[in-house]
Image (cartoon, rainbow, N blue to C red; front, side, top):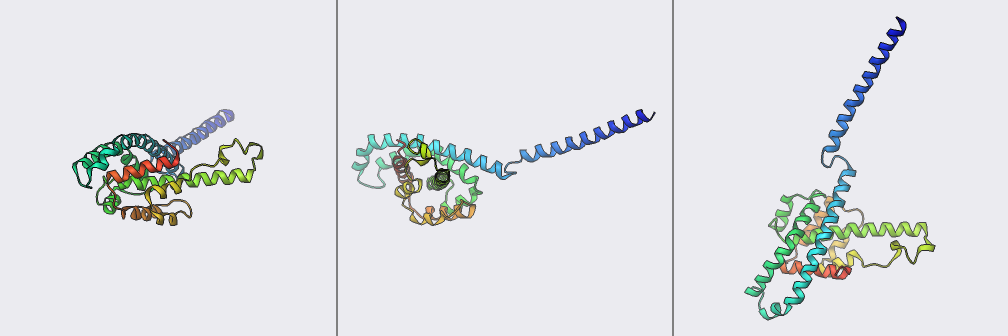
Length: 231
C-alpha cells in the first residue's frame, strides 16, 4: 500500500509540474506573438525594414538613372519649372518612387514614427521627402554598423587578412554620400550615438524644411546611390 501511495503522489506531483510548465509555455508563446514585445523582436523587424528599404532604393535608383540619362535633354529644353514636360517627368518618377516611399514609412514605423507625425511635419503622408527621412535613417544605421565592425577588426588586429578582409576595406561613407545628395548638414549633429525616436524626429523636421518635389527627391536618391557605387 505504501508503494502504491508513493506512486500516486509521484504521479500527481508530475502532473502538477507538467501543468505549470504548460501554462508557462502558453504565456511565453502569447508574449512572443505580440509585435514589439521584446527589444530583440524590434531589432529584427527594423533590420528587415532596413534591408527592404535599401533594396528598393537600389532598384528604383537604377531605373531613375536610366530615365535621367535618356530624358535629360527633354528636361533641359522645357525651360520652366512648371511646364508640361517637367510635370510628365514628375509623374513618371513618382511611379518609380512609390515603392521606396512605402518602405520608408515602414522603416520609420520601427522607430516609433507614426503616420500622424509624418502628416503633420510634411503636410501630406505621401510627401516624397519622407523617402529622404528613411534614407537618412538607413545611412545612420549602416554607418554605425560599419564603424562597429571596423573597430572590432582593429581590436582583433587581423594583420594576416588585412588586404582581403572586407571589414578593413576602404568603402564609400554612408553619411558623406547622404550629405552630398541631400545637403542637410545639420543632421550630422544627431549622429552621436544610437538612433532613437527623438533623434529621428529631429532629423525628420530638418528634412521637412527642404523644398523638394518628386523630381528633386529622385535626383537626390540617384546621386546617393551613385556616390555609394551602386549603379
